[in-house]
Length: 232
Image (spheres, rainbow, N blue to C red):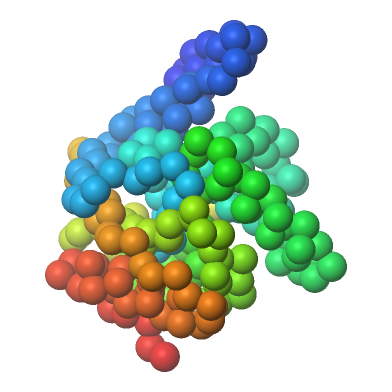
């Protein structure tokens, strides 16, 4: 909370002069204060890149943002949490409502517009967090806007690898959001999380093929840590 109280006024002042780097700095600080030490493997993420990543914990967001400076695609139900919603907006989050079928075209356009800007855009195609033991199935509809992607947009799988601590950082069934948040903030010591920045995948016109290709690339990167691929 002290870190938030420090960052918000600096961010608001920075915005008066144009863009602000404080959302990325805030998220990097959240990861560090949570005991996360990030190690990267692979070429850095460039602008106009869609990051397709596995989803283990809410900590994935500050970890990815700190490493790549990316924005995120998030479920629209965050609108019920005014503070969280405002914080997400400051990092240019694209909100989607998966139940609003008539708004799919508008949401697709919003994601593509976000990729025109200087920040990469991250998407979690599992659609939810996991318990850290298994990589869940990637949902092809979440990738529909990028099959095929615009010619200038690259798609890169990123494996967020918590190593032997994956189960500890996962979100087990039945644990409330508050309990998970307090448990992870209250854990002692540090943990190294490796971001495997994997090569760009080919442009595909079939969203199911895109889901399978990115899923398998991430599954292969996580296999040495004992994370099981989705059973399909």
